[in-house]
Amino acid sequence: MLEELAIAAVAAGSAAVAYLMAAAKVVRQYERGVVLRLGRLQREVRQPGFTLIVPVVDRIRKVNMQIVTMPVPAQEGITRDNVTVCVDAVVYFKVVEADKAVVNVEDYRFAVSQMAQTSLRSIIGKSDLDDLLSNREKLNQGLELMIDSPAVGWGVQIDRVEIKDVSLPETMKRSMARQAEADRERRARVINADAELQASKKLAEAAHQMADEPAALQLRLLQTVVAVAAEKNSTLVLPFPVELLRFLERSTQQAEGRADTGHPEVRPPEVGHPEAPHAVPTDLVPEEVLDQIRDQVGAAPADTDPPRGLTPLRDSADGVTATGTTPPRT
Image 1: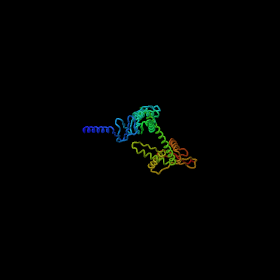
Image 2: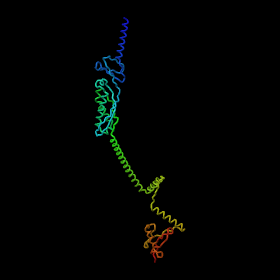
Image 3: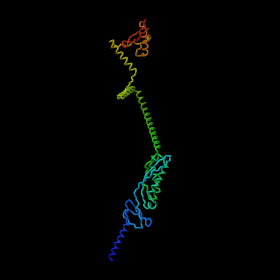
């Protein structure tokens, strides 16, 4: 009798342990438990921790409440401006109502993936190529709204949608590169033209200033010579005024004449008209007139008398015969 009682107690204890093991469930912190009793949904969603269910009668499904990162496969489409592109994206979502995610949709992950692909194709067809490349923030918001609208009934909340990459055909890439190059060249030409305009205005102001002060032009010339002379591999050609060269030549000839004769400087005689009351200095007579007079005197015979009113003179410096005025003969 005692043995039968002991065996029954052991059997009951074993059954109780088996029952507890079948009824005991553990829900993790990032999960929620949805219980279906005889196929009917229980309103109470089991929270994280230890929980008990009725074995064989109840079925529990654990739903992950973490944010899910789902890549959207690349979708090829034609934009509104008839450009073929290939766009891929990524969707961040999470389950906010576990019971709806279990009851209202068979597989919420697959449903969100298909909705994201469809919405991405729709966004490509409604947008221009420039919007896909530069205005992605607005497209992301529109894509998020398109996916989130049906996902609300599935107990899913779309956290964020991002367009990752936009692939273009090679011909379109080359066309865009040429367009960007032409635009940069246009801006460079505009900048150069503006610089030339500003430089011309400054040069005009400098020209007016140099016209008021002629010495400034000489100083600027000397500065240019100094700047060019800094380069050792360049040949410098410095222009001089012809008047300065003539002045230096006359000074050199006069100095040589005084050194040869040992006499003080003899100034050329004054040339004037016989009827003029005063003689005209040679410095006021043009050089061309003096050259004509010298040619005429040199071409005349040596034994002939000079013309009336002209007396031949010989310059000791250069040996050129010059003419001067003499009083008329009485």
